[in-house]
Length: 177
Image (cartoon, rainbow, N blue to C red; front, top):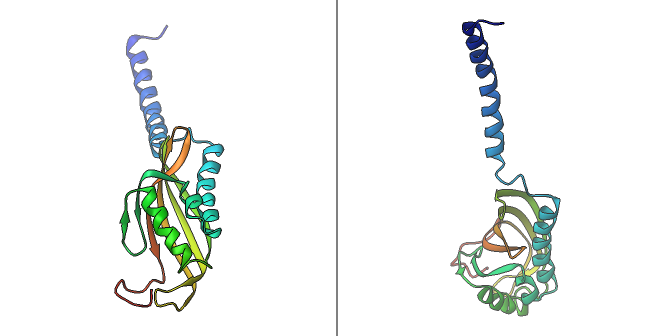
């Protein structure tokens, strides 16, 4: 039988060895707040982006906006802010009837960061061909970035915030937009 002093020494040594391992494990878990997300969620999130892109490419503003929450916060590449799906849909219906009626958009999801089990940040790069500038001249190629904040509502992923940047945009006051 071990004497109490040896037992305490071994217990202390064990604690010193186990504690760092437990801290490493807890940090790993904290760095991945939504490990419960599975391949089905990732596929559903990518499908939201694909649905948006498909709606764009068929010039159907209603279909494009099915991926948006009713209370979406939408910030366009020009800095215009809309706070309803209906507003975004109405704006794009006008664009699809005019400047974007021959446009084609390609979207590529670059990263999905889980902020919680029902909240993600999505980095998406896009490119567009066939658009017109506001002065009516051709805008043959555009590309940019959009960050979507998506939430899972009633079992379905929807875009709740969208912030877009256009890499080759001109200044807001320019007639060449």
